Image (cartoon, rainbow over all chains, first blue to last red):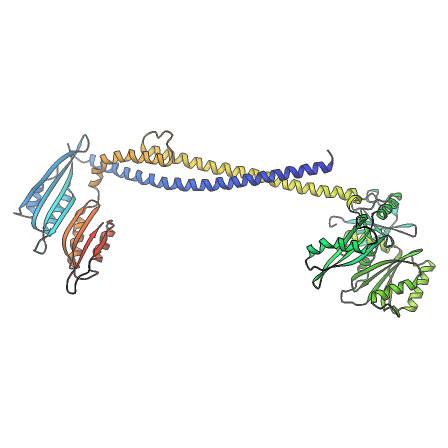
Amino acid sequence: MNAARSTRLLWLAAIVLVVVGLVLGIQAEKAIRTTGQELTKLSVLSESLDRLAATDRQYLSARRELDALPPGRPPRLEVLLERALPGAAFDDGRESVSRVSEEWGLRQREVSLNRAPLEAVMAFAREAESCRPPWKLVSCIIRATAVAGQGDVVLTFESLERR
Amino acid sequence: MSSVRTAYGIDDLDGSVIAVRAELVRGRVVTSRIDLGSIPPAALAGTGGGCRAAMPVRQSFSHELQAPFARRARAIRVLPTLLDLELPFALDDCVYAFAEIRPAAGTTRALAVGSRTTAIVQRLEDLAAREINPLTLDHEGLALWAGSLRELPRGESEHGLRVMVRCGAGRSTVVVGSGARFRGAHSVRTGDVAQVGRLLRAYAGDGAGDAPPCEWVWAGNLEIPEAIAMQESLAAGQVGTRATLDDPAAFLARCLASRALQSRMLPCDLRSGRLTHPSVITRERRRLNAAAALFLAGGILLCGGSLLATGLAREQARVAENAFQARAQDVAGIDLGAARREYALSIVEAQLAERADALRPFADVFSPSLTEVLLSVLSIGKSESLQLQLLSVNRGEIMIQGVAGEWRGCDGLVDSLREAGYPVVLDRRDALEGERIPFTIRQ
């Protein structure tokens, strides 16, 4: 092989390699861009996953905390109502108990009060929520009456109790 | 040339060979006359620094051309055609070079020098007969002019002609320049003073009368009678200064050796094309090979770097994908199989939703108290003098209807609910003057 031919071959090889390198470079750039997009997508999915996991942890933690409590039932609402609103007339609303798990049931109780002083009603709700085990106010509808500070009230309480 | 530190110049004046060695010492060229025999054979053969010879003016030509273009690249394209028109023989039969190309008032001027190929071949054969294979073949006129400026510097601003005469037995070379600019080179019969006078009057633009005042520089074989007579005759009939260079016989060889080391002015090599010295071809090929090797290395680096970058990017994606998959599996608590990304997340969601339904009552026990929200609403209603007609609150939902004393009366209540996590909107209706503003707050 003469010198001129070897120079030509060297240049040919160099050009081929540079062209291949450029093609690979373009592919690398695309791969990097695609990876960037994939990582962004995975990051968004991971955030959703973290949110789900956090909620799940919160639920499990709540369950564990309640499991640790001694068995018992919350006081009857009539007793608490009598203390907060002595002599008040109330409609004995619906009461139901549904099964949550093998050990736990969910008691739901509705209380309707007509023309009740709202401050006293709020005091009653607060006391119901502060006893152990507690009632939890899950719904409240208040309609104003002609007298200021009074209203027709429908309260719904829930309480978890061990079966 | 910068890598060359020693070069040799060779001149055959009147049948004898004169050799000069030039060395680059601390950036300066130092020349010394030597015997031909003390030149290393490699240099005589043209390798290493090599030796330089010149193409005599009587066997070559020099022409100043003017291309009507200011753009150099465009001018360069037409210069060969312009030169062809000037020559009495075909340009294809010549070896030529443009020693200088410079812009001049919207045009481009070029100095072309060259010689017939047959003359160059003959010159190389003559030198080869003396076992000299010059690395480059300079143009005698350019070498003499550049050498005269090196040894007797002359500024561009110095007007008037400089006439460089190199005498030889039979023929002499006359090189004419203005300021520091080369104008032309001619071969005259030694002692032909009239011819020299005609030439000078032509350069001065005056066809008749006396020759203009000139600066005379003498070199060559000044001891032969014709040269002595020529000097005396010109000294008697011409006005101007006169200088004789040191060792005038070796002047051309000195010029050639010096130009090999520092050839910034009017560079020229008439050994080109198929007449190029083999060592120049080899050096050029080495340079090309080195450039190709560099290019090759660049290509290899580019390939390697690209493959590495692609691999790393894909690996990073794979690691992130696996990490997500493992975490999703961990959260779901089941084997997700081949499910990936959104599908895997949907399985996790479904799995946790099932568990959440069973656990939500436990979590609700610890959720914020509605009583506190009610107390806050009633308290703000009282302080802002709102008349609340209907208040309905349950987990995550709220609706309040009422009337306010002024247009912005319920803004505080809306802000408070939003802070408590209820994304409520306020709907207000216009009222007549003196009437309260009905409003509804809902999600």
